[in-house]
Image 1 (cartoon, rainbow, N blue to C red):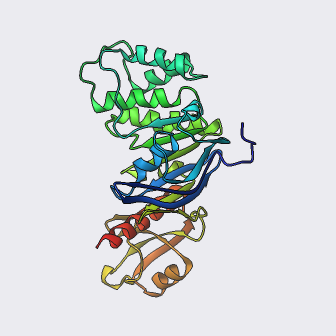
Image 2 (tube, helix red, strand yellow):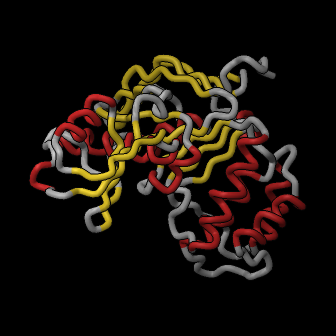
Image 3 (tube, rainbow, N blue to C red):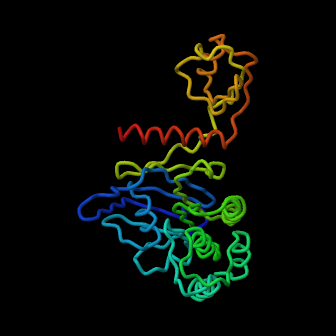
Length: 299
């Protein structure tokens, strides 16, 4: 068992190729207890491959991966302390969800059927309905419960809201994920709709050009929520970032001190107010900047 101060996930110099096509090169990164990390990257950049490596479903070509003090060796031992919601979950179509959960309880130490039932109810999953052709949403709901009912130390979520209805999405993000984080789990999320999990994120990883880099986690510093009535939009300084909200003439930006001074000096706003930006606003803005940088790299 790992020491409390040790990272839950430690990746060191990991590379992976398929048919001589490199997907990951010399990736080194760590995840700590309680972190909720957003994994950002374009389609095909290796996010799913990284998750499969961490969940001990693939071997790296080089480098090492340790989860909760255990070095991965394709034995599957690590799955007792990890949970994985894949982007396309699949289950035995002749079993009911309850039968799937009972099987899971037999093979995964600490898998709690009572907790699984409570979470299934919150997600709106009928445990006794036999599946012939489960919908994407049904499979996703069951994947959440299968991945998390043993309170894993590391949770990997690959497009976790795919197919979920509004009620299930709200339960997963506002109840289930916070419960996991409260246990000290580290959570890594890859999601096309990353803004919907922005309030939960404490860190961002950017995967691009076969490499992974950590984005500075002090994203809540240095930005100001500036709001005002704009008298003449043609005079708004072109150097300002796009507003985060615009309702008629009322406009809200996230600005640094220099940008705020430029806006004030432009004499095109009335009633300029400033206040600290919320963590959600900061993360949403940071996500937009990073996604824009990904787009620019492709053009």
